[in-house]
Image 1 (cartoon, one colour):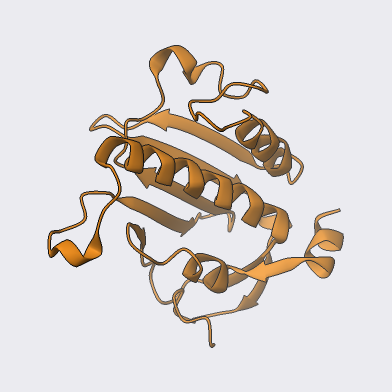
Image 2: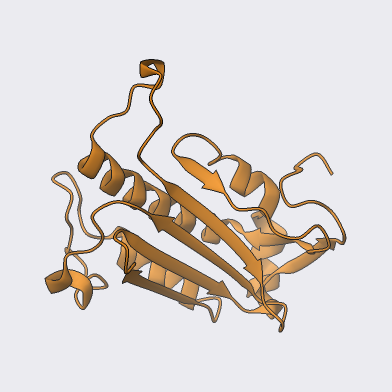
Length: 173
């Protein structure tokens, strides 16, 4: 199934990550000898949902930021990709928003649970199902210093190695 999904609808990780590279989103750099992989487009759907959730949280906490104000943007979202020793891919989305209310942490995987006024509560449950369909894992926890940390782990047999020794943030390679 994974190879079929990769061959029909996939995206290179650098171009996927570069699409989020704007304030307040920062992409963490990984070492230059990391392998570039192709991930199924369904992973993009889940990552997009996690970034949207983080944007909602930081905007709710800090309000809309005006870049022309000359002040530093207090909102922070970090997308941190990492390749593990077993060649699986781990991506974390970290924000400095309010985090997940403690009373909802155990319920966030249930359909209909949301903290957004206009949310339907289907993003996280759907994302978890998509990631688990690859044999992966999606976890969310509150960071000790505030905010939330979402972690996607995709097993090595569900990513395709494209190139070696290419910088992660260079989508032209």
